[in-house]
View 1 (cartoon, rainbow, N blue to C red):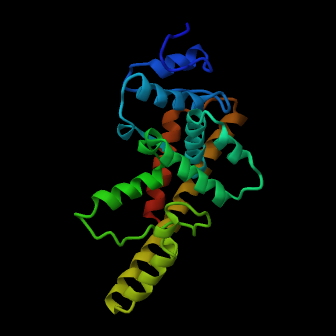
View 2 (view 1 turned 30 degrees about the horizontal axis):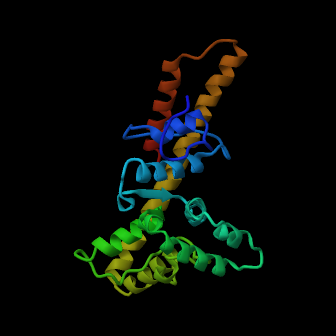
Length: 247
């Protein structure tokens, strides 16, 4: 069924058009790769702004990667740029990524409705919330710590700490271990953790071994083991392992 709207939805199929004009508060679109999910989402944004009068500043679009964010902004600019100049800039292989990033920024500012949209990655959005609204809880001199050092240049790069999470914890541990009492507690904790892990591994292997023996005997006897028998074996194995000194 083709839907009549002021917004041009001719590039969408019937299902995609239904998703765009849907009035439901929650809408899940499931489709394979390359089937037009992003195109449908972008048309939904345009539809809400043009047809429903929704303010761009009231729309939040979250993506997983920076590349997905750039792609969405690029498509929105391309749809608004009737001259086709921006699309030529994107396809120009002589331009560097930095040049294209600059063009994206300038064109985004040119179209105020696109500039008013919030299109961010999860990390970027959460960071902006902390930066803008966390000032009452803590100062804004905090840095982002990750598991790996970031190589890509984006809006978060200048706010990322030079150390990884491991390096920060390593420094903190070294500093804290200057305190003898803390060092002794840490040693006890590590020893308890290792011993518990060894004990649990032995316990698990014991249960599996006993269960495997039951299944093997049942196969030889061509009978199906009783669930109670298996549970009882696991319970006995657990109790016997707990009663065994793991040291």
